[in-house]
Length: 300
Image 1 (cartoon, one colour):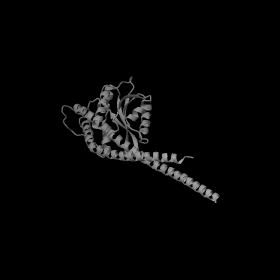
Image 2 (cartoon, helix red, strand yellow):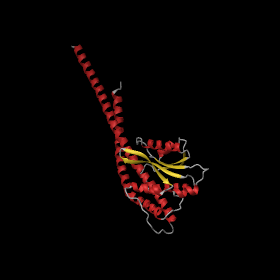
Image 3 (cartoon, helix red, strand yellow):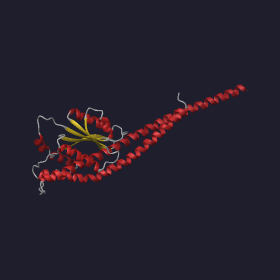
Image 4 (cartoon, helix red, strand yellow):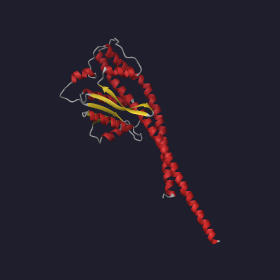
C-alpha cells in the first residue's frame, strides 16, 4: 500500500503535468488562430497566380514548357528509365500532437511501397527522425524550429525542388501534408506539384467555388512560354507556402486536442489519487483514535 508521502508526491507531479498541458493547450489555441488568419490573408494572391496560368494555357494554345505534363513527357520520355518520384513530406518539429505525424508516416510508406523509385524531401524534425531509420532515400531535410512558416521558407524549398526537377533528378513531385477539414477532422492530403496540367489546375480552381476558366485571348510579352515559366516558381512557392501554413494550423489543432485530452486525464488521475489519499489519511486517523480510546480504557 502506498504511503501518504508517496501519494502527496504523485499529486504534486500530476498537478505540475496538468499545469504544463493546460499552458500548451492555450499556446496551441493562439497559434492556431494566427495561422488561420495568415492563410486567409495570403490565399487570394496565390489563387490569382493559378488563374493566370490557366488563362495562359487555355488562351495561348499549346505552351511548350518543361513544367507541363504533356510537354514534359514528350521531351523526357524514356522507356528504358523507370519513373522516379519525389515526395515533399511536411511534418512537425515537435511531438505531443496525438496522431498528427503517424498519419503522415502511414500515407508516405504506402506511396513508397507503390512506387519504389521514390525520394523524400522532408520538412520537419519529427519526419527526419522517423524516416532516417527507414529504407527510403532522403534527398533533403528542412526545419523551421516550430514556428509559423515564412515566405522565405517556402521560397527555399521551391527553389530546391525546381532546380532538382530541371536537372532531371526526379520526374514528378507530390506534397503530403495534413489538411484541416475541421478541428476534429485532420486528414493526410496528397497534392500534385510538378508537372502541371491544365485539367488539374481547372479542378483546383473549381474547388474554390468558381466557374471554369474559358479561353481568353491576351498578348504576352515576350512570349507565352516565358510568362508561364516565370509564373511557375511563384505558383510552386505559393502552393508550398499554403501547404506549410495548413500543416502548421493542423498541427496546432491536433496538439490542442491532445493537450485537452491530457488535461482531462490528469484531472481524473488527480481526483483518484486525492480520493485514495483521503481514505488512507482517514483510516490512519481512525486507527489512532481507536488506539487512544483503547489505551484510556485500559488505564481506567
